[in-house]
Length: 127
Image (tube, rainbow, N blue to C red; front, side, top):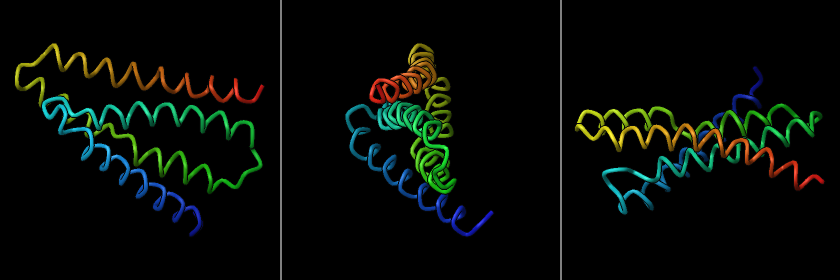
């Protein structure tokens, strides 16, 4: 690992985490029982990672630090499995099983769908 790789991951993660935090501050007051900031971060992150994967496949000559900055750092900091897990477990512990199940489906299904959509979008733009 080089200092550039270390900095790329760290700086990208900081920017992604700040954005996720901002989304929570902005969106969570609307539905405090079901924090939408985490869902938006995961769905947007899923879409952006699809775009990024397709982009880096088409541009293999780019410095590996760019991939580390965008995918590992920024998108790793933006998306959050641990917060999703904590929010879901909280709902389930409150006995809100329907909401908990819906959140699981939205986060997992939605993120996978958005990743495919991001890759497809990149393919369309390249044509």
